Length: 345
Image (cartoon, rainbow, N blue to C red):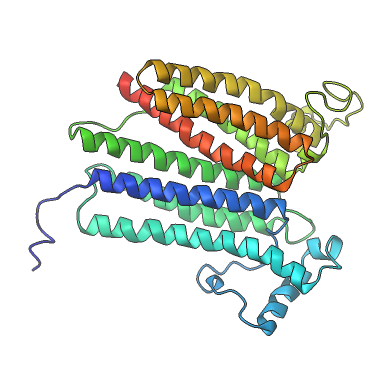
């Protein structure tokens, strides 16, 4: 019998918090690479889901021709990319491969330390199930990613914007869950009697409002709605184009109509921004000046980058920055909400 294995538990909340922040950073990187994958239209270049063997890239010319042959069977190739060369295919394959490889890396970076912390009895009481849920969410995200890809392989030239939104919002949910749990553990490390901070109704409302704006951003990307009008603040010569086609039933316009989606995403941004500025100001008053200042700066930066994305006709790196700052905005909002709710507890 190993005496160390049966010794009294010795939780390490600070170590686990640092580990979770590192995982959140890896998820952030994956969101950035995912944005590049989407904007370079690389997401359909790998047509099979092989969670283990897919980690090995093509190693010779025969392997590359096999992968290229599989891609040639997609509607995207047959409709849009019939003149694509093998070298051009290697470019789009690279981004999708890196995106999937990062997913595998995150899975290992979470699962292996989680198992080690559990075996060594380092996880504080009550946090094991929460970490298990975060691990399950990560596994689910992999399945959602493949579910998204399958929507674009046949009879479409791109993935479903609805499935894209689910995939992106799940990534943001994982970042938020990681940051919130890490902050709880940091609090526990400072005060062993501290209890997990509960999300208040106000914080939930603010996060849901932000999630709605992020969802519209995903719709904008998936429908390529950013290309509809590259002027600001007007859409062409008016606030809303009078000749814009309207879908019936009316509710579908907020989901499927690129012009309406872009319009709503433009102007909801100011409502969300105002709500986040108020949250940041309150956090500053309540003793979290760094968190409040970071949130204010990110809100201003995100609105500026959003406008620049439109004015540049969705320039690749500006659009990628817009998605990246969106992920940082989620983390900063969660940090401010956690601080507020912890003080109110």
